[in-house]
Figure 1: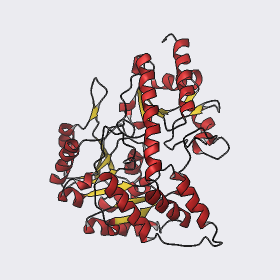
Figure 2: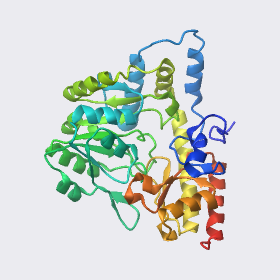
Figure 3: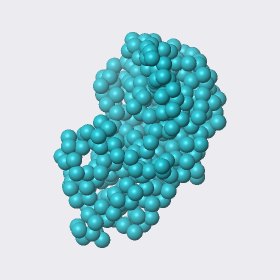
Figure 4: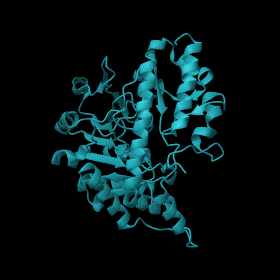
Length: 391
C-alpha cells in the first residue's frame, strides 16, 4: 500500500467531514481546510498503541521519562536545541497551552500582541481571557513575502504590554522566520520585558531550503523569556491523541506556568497518548523524511498549477502543509470568493478573512493529501475558473 495514498475518511467522524454541511452548506465539497493530514498516521505509532492494548487495563498513568527524553533527542537532532526533561510539561493542545500561559503571565486588562493574519485561536485566547488584543500586522510585499513590522510593534508597546504570541513557522502564510528576523523581534521584546509565547507546533514541517530555529535557542535572554509550544500532532498526524508539550527553561516562568496549570488540572494525559508520543519521537525519523518528500512534491504541483493560472497568486510556503492562495485578482468580495470555491469549484477551504482582516481575498488550502486528491482539487478549480471567464 502507498504510504501516502488515498484514505477515505468520510465515515470516520473526521471533523473536516462531519462539519461540511455546517460550514459550507453542502456535503458536496472536498474538505481541505482543517490542518490535519489525510495521510495515515505512521505505522510505528499504531503498532505501539496496538501492543499497549494487549494489556487488559487502561488506567491512570503518568508520562514516562523516556517519552520526554525521546522528544528532547528529536529536538536536538532536528533543531540543534538541547532541552532538558525538567523543562517540559504535558498539555492536551497548543491552544490550551496558550490560554494557560496568558493567565500565568498577565492579568486581566493587560495587553497581548498578536501578529495578524494568524491562526484564529490566537485572537480567541486573548479575548476569552479578558486581555486587551493589540494587533501588529505582518508586512506583505509585492512578491507575496511576509515580514515582521518592528516599527509598528515599537509604536504599540506600552507599560501594559506583557505578552507577544509568535507563530513560528507561521500559519497561514507559511513563513519560516530567519535567525536575523527572530533575533530582532526577540531583542525588542526582551528589552521591553515582554514574554514571548512561541507556537512552534509546525516546526518539523519545514522544506529543505529553510531551517526552523527555536526562538528560545538564540540567546540566554530569550531562553529565559520564551515559552515554547510544540507537539507531535502536526508532524505525525496524531492530533486525535490530544498531547503536546510546553517547554520553559526559566525556573521562575516554569513555576508560574505550572501553578496556573494545576488550577486547570490538565493532569498527565492518557496512556495511549503517552505510548503514541514516545513511539513518534523515538521511531518516526524515516517516516518523517518520506513525508517531507511527499509534501514537497505536492507543493511543487501547486506552484506549477498557479504558474499556469496567474489569476491565483502563490508563494511557496517555507514551512507547514498549508497553501496561502492569493485570490485578490479575481476581484470578488470575501463572501463571493468563498461561494465560488464551495459552489463552483467544490472545494471546502479556510477563508482568509478568518485569520484576520489582513487575510481578505485569500484562501488557505491544506495540501497534506494523497497526490490524486490534489490533482482532482486543482482540476476542479481549473474548470471553475474557466467557467467564470478566468481561463
